[in-house]
Length: 517
Image (cartoon, rainbow, N blue to C red; front, side):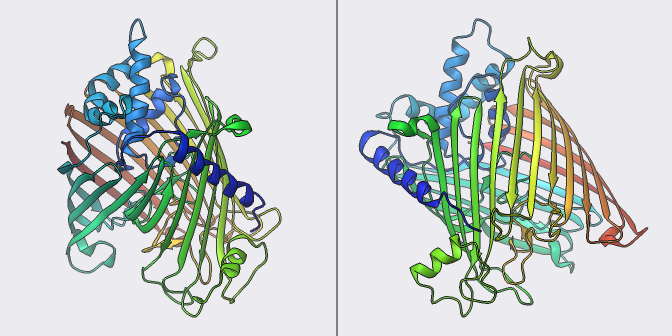
């Protein structure tokens, strides 16, 4: 895959570094907001009401310092309202308390807690019951098994001076039927996530285990999602989007992620052990309503392919010529995306007060331009029929290119998987996915209704597998710092594993309790 913009991207990165290092003052280092946090869903509401404008929501996770800056901006807009909306009350009564230290630091860079240890940032207890081979996805690779499952997970954070921050999330789990091993039962203790950050001005270097989500998709992403287990990675990024000087100011706020990791999981057959994974994500916001992004992943290396020069690596990452079975062989994916969020449109469209439209278009090949295309497209209607804190969503994903239906995520040497899970869209190769969801929140109570339909083996199988999931979820916020959520999903699968007339009916029940300290 040939990417002509690479030199320009490198120049932009250099400008970001120089501009932030010498001209801007920023807060102290901070840990990330977990991808499971309700903050990400609620921030879409804020954008749909015009309460925040400089955020880039297609690059996750957010640093807590950036979350504090966005919450502070939303609080200022709410304070200026004659009658604050339900969304504003949620920010003022909930997030203003949960992120009080980060908001204070965002408002006053001198008011920074230089060194602290927070033994418990959050604690969660969850119980999951699976009746049959129910399909689990977008859960950071946790291998629930048939029957009873229980997990206790803790999060601890710390800061040393202004430049270093740390986070650890240990997990104690019991997996019914030994999770995905299908034998007996299993207790598992592991470090689910944990990392250290070095922050200098507005550049941060993160080293450790963490999850990523690239792209505007809500239900799935083409290149990078939390479907697989968190990576052990090195990540360079700018936590706060910045506006560059000179003519680059027309790009609006700019943010990037640059990652590198080695996938030390079990591989099989001709798949090469311990390959490297390189990733680059760039996001810009040229207009307060429009966010644009581009992502690139390349998996390469492995046994007998380690003696690579700088020239070999450049050839591997940016050549548009196949190098099958050579040391410069690789599997690459590229995607571009947009998200358009238009607030306050009730006077034009009575069905909603805010609307979000988005699309991610990707390619996995060495063509010029790259072919074997896939895409994710979706919409969200906020406050439909004037219902406060309600949203109706729809999302469609097509990962069955006409040219090569099995191109996505599959490769003889470098499949885009980690610990058995695709780290892109959970639906996988030669598949399509349709997702619909209704969500509504109240002062303490919220509920969700969802429907997901997957078709697998769209072009390559005589009998496509069809899977329907019907979801109902209800949650209750006991107080600012704690909530309880109950979820039920019924799943029906026809033509299981593409075998005609073979069907399954599975169920899932989940109960989660979370406390933030």
